[in-house]
Structures are given as C-alpha cells and as structure tokens.
Length: 201
Image 1 (cartoon, rainbow, N blue to C red):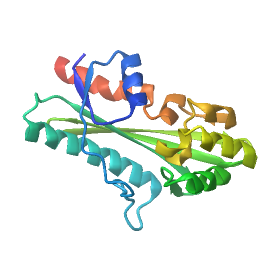
Image 2 (image 1 turned 90 degrees about the horizontal axis):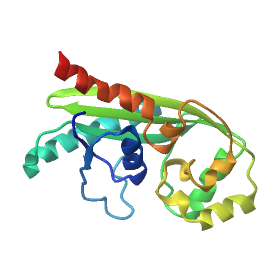
Image 3 (image 1 turned 180 degrees about the horizontal axis):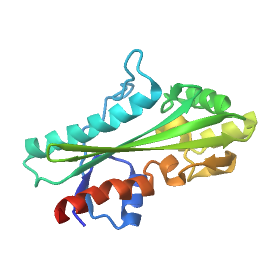
Image 4 (image 1 turned 135 degrees about the horizontal axis):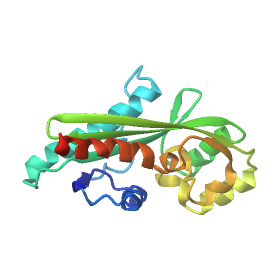
C-alpha cells in the first residue's frame, strides 16, 4: 500500500490509520493562536457543506506544504469531524462554561456526526463522508460537571469523545463508531483503495 501523509494532529486518527494497516507520516501545521478559530464556518454555509470544505482545505494545504518543505511527493489525507444539532455546528468548546452549555444541549437529544475525508493525490482530489446519528441519554448537571472535570471535552467537536468517558452517555448510534471518533474506517479504506486502483490501471 502507498505510504501517505496524514494532515492531522489527532492521535485518534493516527491510531485508526494504524488499525487499517496504512503506512503514514504525520504532516503538521502551526497551530492557531489561542482563542483563534482556524476553521471558521462561512456566512450562510450549511453545516454539511462546512465539514466537507474544511476537509478539502486541509488536504490542499497539506499538498502545498509538501512542495514548500521539499518533502517527497505522496498522497495527503485530511479529515474533519463536526457535530451537528438541528442544523447547527457544535464545535470545540471555548472553555468550561461553553462545554457545559454544549453538553446540556446534547442531553436527551439526537444529533449527527459528520466526518468528511479528502485525499489529494497530485492534482486529483477524492472525497467521501460518513454521517452517523447519535442519541444521548438525559444527562444530569452532576454528570456533565464530572465529565468536564475529566478534561476530555475541550479539544473535541461537540465537547465529547465517544471513545472516552462520554461513551456512557450514548444510548444509540446509527452509522460508524470510528466515524464519530474522527476517522471512519470503512470510508477511509474505500478512499485509499483508489490509490491502489490507480497503480493497477
């Protein structure tokens, strides 16, 4: 299988790629300044369009970085995960109060997790997306406070990680568990198969 670059800082995405047996190197960018949103939603942009555009932007940014840094040319994989409640994007919480507010909104509600994938191979762009429906149990203020005390919510879209302590809040999912984690294995494997098909054609 072709060695790729992963344009992501997420250790979860690295673990999931390794689970797929995909050889990869991580392509890092300078982090945004504190308090600065480096993935802003455009005015009037639908949530489903936002997550796909953000993944594309990351992949093309990675491809440009290869040339700028004079790195060996390889395909670049990027992903973006967004929690959507009633059509609204719930991003990473700014602080504890924001995390509490987000989790209160998710309590007892059904939301969607979209993880968009973008793979840049030379001048070609390949895309896919995983959409998973997630249902939360009704959460008490004590449960929310204890989860915020754990420190888990603050670097995660929607203020929770399904693979961590928040797994106990989820009463049902319809879709991809690994998609909610940040890298849907089925869709990722399907996308990367295009690289193997390219070589055999």
